Image (cartoon, rainbow, N blue to C red; front, side, top):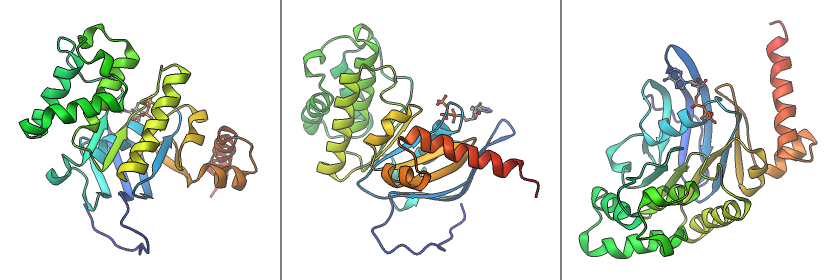
Length: 259
Ligand SMILES: Nc1ncnc2c1ncn2[C@@H]1O[C@H](COP(=O)(O)OP(=O)(O)OP(=O)(O)O)[C@@H](O)[C@H]1O
């Protein structure tokens, strides 16, 4: 990837820096020249309608997406660098756990894969289970857990080893309001107590106000990179959803204006 230091940062090094990021899938440009920074220690929401490219961007950030061009640095190294493996936690939309193992056995297995020393493993597994409030179900077979509980096992896996960056693809989809609120509280706790950076995708705009910053996407492009308050003020809107719709209308009008 090209290195290009045109933007001079006067703050701490961004947790994620994208510059002219482009991804082509199946011959289609699905990310079209994204440029943005994610500040360290923040909870940033990645919002946009289904199919706009959120998962593709997350895959690029964690280094599992092919055909990525432009610049994409994560925690100071090019995305996908081997040194980032233990520093980045990633939860996909589909829970990736073994259904024939218990929650604890799943975590123990992934802790071993991550290289967490045998002597520290039991403590770290217990901590991760407690973080996601699953201690009481630790020894239940994953196959017998509810969808929401399974999602929390995946999240616990991502928390193992205390990663500096957590990339969570729609972690609250399908959860009841109480669980959603508890998870968002947990995300903010992780950022505040550990200084970790969280990038969390959602297509539900009412989750926007739970984020410190927002990346709003549409059709592979970035519509806005702002705080929820500034976004509302900028577009004179009462809700982030209205601000998003306002920006979509503006983008459409620009597309329709003859050059
Ligand atoms: N293997 C593929 N080949 C070609 N196009 C693909 C492929 N996978 C995804 N796409 C397209 O890339 C675009 C972005 O998909 P992506 O999964 O990143 O969107 P998303 O915003 O995460 O959607 P959702 O919220 O529904 O998960 C979509 O238009 C999708 O159809």
